[in-house]
Amino acid sequence: MKRPEPVQVIKQRRDAALQKLVAGVPYMQFLGIQIDRRGDELTAILPFDDKLIGNPMLPALHGGVTAAFLEVMAIMELSWAMIWEDMESGRVSDDAPRIHLPKTIDFTVDYLRSGLPRDAYARARINRSGRRYASVHVEAWQDNRARLFAQATGHFLMPGRDG
Image (spheres, rainbow, N blue to C red):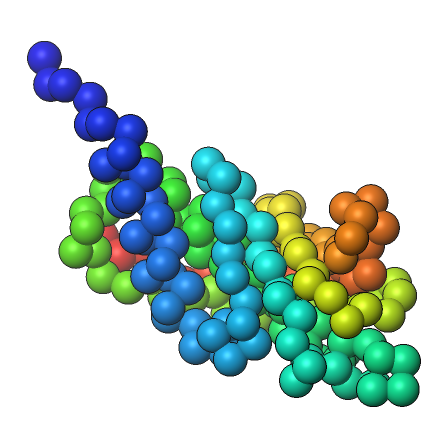
């Protein structure tokens, strides 16, 4: 009987896969977006930076930055779900090819209030994911998870699976 892998090895493999995924999206580095993983749940973090301000009179986060933050989180959630499924089933190894990211079909953002000059967080929920199409809902907040400042719904064309 084969011994199960140590928890640390599994965690390192998952973290390495997530780092590789994030590294494949240079715009995330430009905006400073980080991804925190707890099990299979991802939370995107947009640390505050002065360059993210759109209206210095308020001051408020730029609407384009907010939309990009939400869209990036939706794409990360879809990509991570595919990677997670492959890792858990043993279909992927450490030298697996880079995953192809989903392509946005449409993305609708609801700006619920001004994004304040502080860190922002986002989580995405996949509403539907098939072989060719996926629908995702994303919520963003700052100080209080129950007090969203933006939300979005997007539809994505899913990449073909290798193998």
